[in-house]
Image (tube, rainbow, N blue to C red):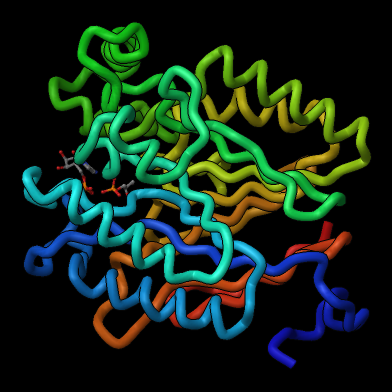
Length: 317
Ligand SMILES: Nc1ccn([C@@H]2O[C@H](COP(=O)(O)O)[C@@H](O)[C@H]2O)c(=O)n1
Ligand SMILES: O=P(O)(O)OC[C@H](O)CO
């Protein structure tokens, strides 16, 4: 039995569905490097981490997989971006079931939305990348577009680019808008490599959660950018995580929020009992180690079985 002594194990039930998770693969065919703060990044090894993940997900015959974004790294030489993304999408496609992708900042450093979304098979209208799916009648999964209002990915003259640049100018006094210098606490999220959820998406979220509540469904919210300061570094948070969480808390149906982007990962339960899990990055796995997970979803909780650097976690709803 792979699980601990929690309630889920004690009931020894069959999961409703089981799914794979991975985040921040950030593949590039370039030598190893480091983040701005000096953390090692293994750009080529992340491909091996993904291959190992797909092998495990197939062995376990999981129902679907969710990729939490940043499929390739911003340092990927731009003439190679398209091939690098296709290479990683092909690796995901070796999984024997549906794969749900979401966009991260590094995806958008490489390709504009209009080219990226079809490759990632993200259902889209006007370049927007939020959607939902229901793999079992009891649950809905909402995938948010955290770069809806963003200074990256949209054409330079797009209203969302202009809105994002105005917002950054208002919130971040540094000339390098990726620098959090002088910003305090969660205000350190007002960085160019983050983004926000726009008004139309907020309204859509409200509609979906109201509908889920009426249909007696529970909801898992997925977003590349984390939604809770206690589960993430301040620098990685969604610009308007507070506004999104206000909508989430209006309804009791959201049980879990899962994200990536903050590479060292995290976990917290907020004051409304919503679980927040930020996944450890595949990119930061030294060769020979891994970071991916298999999630068993039950009506009253889930169990995330993590591999190596991705911590296991039981969440009871
Ligand atoms: N504390 C920080 C973190 C980042 N930056 C800037 O963001 C860029 C990307 O950072 P990575 O961690 O992904 O390497 C980096 O080049 C810096 O411009 C920062 O200023 N302060
Ligand atoms: O994935 P990156 O390079 O955008 O890094 C994000 C940072 O970890 C957020 O603090």
